[in-house]
Length: 123
Image 1 (cartoon, helix red, strand yellow):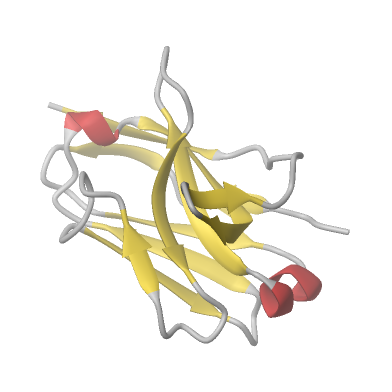
Image 2: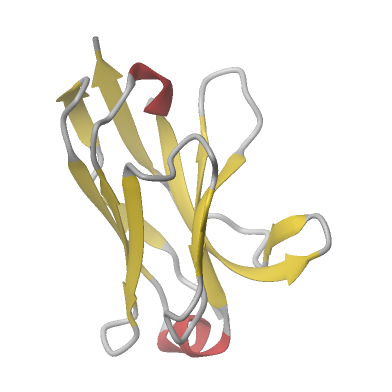
């Protein structure tokens, strides 16, 4: 079973920072790599960042690399996303999910997503 609960979103000014958190089951954290996705109004959900279980590998979308940092605490089954230098284009609902690597990128493991957390960046 999986439980995905995102939190930490809010309204921030461009250039500001925000830290998102994702709580998941111990089973999920101990079994899979984890990732953040986001979906802006009128757009498809897109990949943001991923991290494997041992924290030895991280991957970022080009649009956020250098500004966002993904991390995880396996003992607490918590996934985090430190977001700096936020831009208006970062405005979206952010979701977390377990992922598996494929030839075309990271694929969500669970079809049932959490509520997500809204991030709104004002100009």
